[in-house]
Amino acid sequence: MRKKIVAGNWKMNTLLKDGMELAKAVEKLEKEKTSDALVIIAPPFTHLSRVKELIEGVKLAAQNCASEEAGAFTGEVSPDMLRSVGVEYVILGHSERRAYYGEDDELLNKKTKLALAKDLRPIFCCGEVLEEREAGKLFDVIKEQLSVGLKDLTREEMANVVIAYEPVWAIGTGVVASPEQAQEMHKFIRDLLAGLFDKEVADNMTILYGGSCKPSNAAELFANPDVDGGLIGGASLKAEDFLAIANAY
Ligand code: PEP
Image 1 (tube, rainbow, N blue to C red):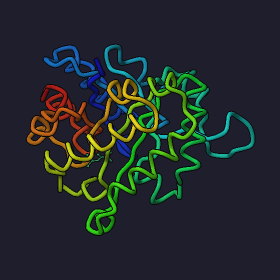
Image 2 (cartoon, rainbow, N blue to C red):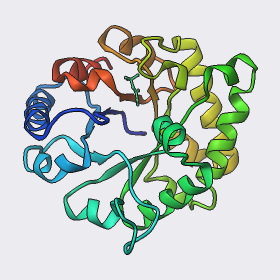
Image 3 (tube, rainbow, N blue to C red):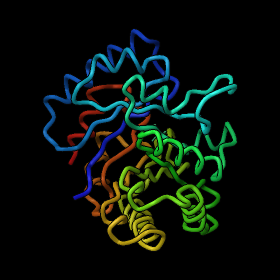
Image 4 (tube, helix red, strand yellow):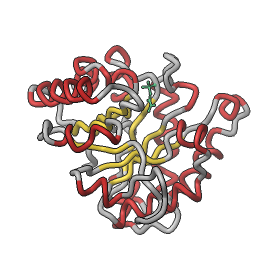
């Protein structure tokens, strides 16, 4: 049985005090939740060690990590550093990292391998921009991002990977993929994984949807057979909305 996950990407939001309040509120509501979805939060780096002390049922993710182990890489944060403060997951390949910081599939492959070697579970993001969808290239784009990004991973390593399909045109725009569009791509991704790895890897893979997911649309998205949860941006900044999404199963 694959895991259901609802993960909150706080991005570059909240100062420490507000972030700690938000984490406390998420932890409290997680205890009362009615679904069996695993709840993950990804606060900014500066908050991670303090937030870790406040959560028990909620898991901790970072929003990025370095592609190198240690050394002269000013401004970078290594997987070992993240593990040392109790981080278990790391978001890699988010479209904002790809678009604003030039992270390409090769670099993401390197980061993914290092994260896994250091016992961090990648939440690996993929997604097409609107022009690519309109030009009918959406499946080619996702195939390229996943086949290069997950290149040379073993079946065992894949058991610790989560995939997030995040159509870039839906991120932070209020425009959400229709349940049919989400299911179509999630099924494509699962079939692709069966080809790249095998059916067991594909069947066990948690594939999250991301892009303007909120309490009002989560249930219809999650009702799809290949949608195993969500990666939530804006709506994860309000504990009630975030947990309402987690309870939408
Ligand atoms: C995201 O950036 O991962 C995301 C899904 O954002 P939003 O929910 O705000 O569209």
